Image (tube, rainbow, N blue to C red; front, side, top):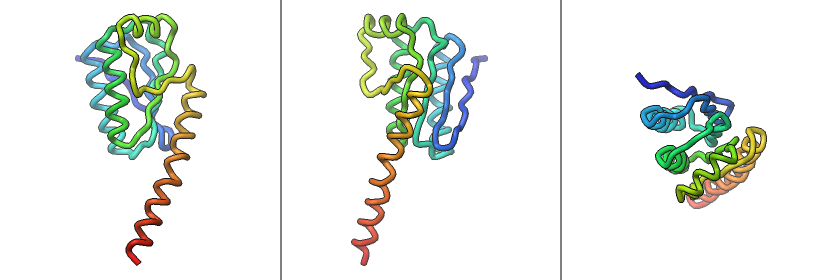
Length: 137
C-alpha cells in the first residue's frame, strides 16, 4: 500500500507538503489526488513544499512538471517551494529545467506569488464577464 500525501485547503490555495521520499507510486497517486482536489474545490493555486526532499530522480522531476501542467489546465497556478540546493543541482544535471514550473525559496514567498497570480486573474475574468454582458444587450 502506498503512502498518501495530504493536501490541505487554505482558501483558494491547496498546500501540499511532501515529508517523505517520494516513491513512484506515491508520486502518481499525488498527481491524481491533486487533480481531483483542484476540480472539487475550484482552487486557483497549488503550493508544493519539497523542503524535506533531499534527493530526486528524473521521474520525480517530471512528476513535478506534470503536476504543474495538470494544475494549469484545470485553472490553477502552481509554485514549488523549498527546493534544496542539492535537489536543484541534480535536476539540472539530469537535464530537467522544469519548464513552466514556478519556484520560490520558501512557503511565504510562494504564497505571495500565488496571491499575486490570483489577483491578476480576477479582474480579467470580471472584464470578460462584463464584455459578455455588453454583447448580450
